[in-house]
Length: 258
Length: 95
Image (cartoon, rainbow over the protein chains, first blue to last red):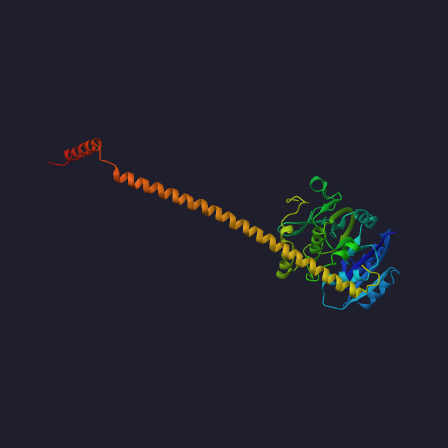
């Protein structure tokens, strides 16, 4: 049976969801373990800031949960790569710690969508209020989320938000990718420590001939603020455009006005 | 991917792979930009050639018009019209 290595970068932040305080990563891992329905190992890549109590609580969630310490200045790509370097699964599932599974068979659906020639699979991500945060990326003048802000059950034009389909890219907040693919393209680029590293990863996959798939029946909450300021640096734009500007001008998968 | 590889070795290998892919992608972008600029230069050159040709054509036409204007004889008809006009104007002058 397929082993999926779930890689969760975290510093053990606490926040409020639906009026209750939670340690995001603990609840995210708990929800993964409760709904996986495939063999999983969970690798939490713990930043130095993670409280010892949170680390202990994570270890107590089960033998599938491992912690790997990350001791360098924050670089999301380096964190993901470190977790992946310790993984043993046939698939990697990159997961933000501020998530919670909604649909029970989400991981089965994502693995099922990850067929021959597929390099990455993304899920449907909802904000806490149930509106749509992510249904695949679309790249034109900028990188955007398809259907951003629509009701979570919106169909979109021709039902494109409700069907499994090829997209230009998917967010690393929840991304399944075959380990062999991740290995072949050298993981996430550490030249993009904060933004666009998932865009770059998807571009690397597409350039190598793999497709990217959005799986709408895999639904998770992503408790990211709707008003989050990405804090994109000019040098990040230089890197992503320096590598992929031609491809970023043209999204062959999503109509421009969606 | 080797089973014997340590995580550190994997990370080092991935860094090299990513750098190679990144360099190739950047080179491809530069080639694409170069191609676009070359096409733009070719287009501008073609438009410049069209305009240069048109300028020469209009100058040649002007030159011919100037020559025809210089050669044009004052005809009897024009002289009559001129005299009639001069006479009419003179008749309106106060005596």
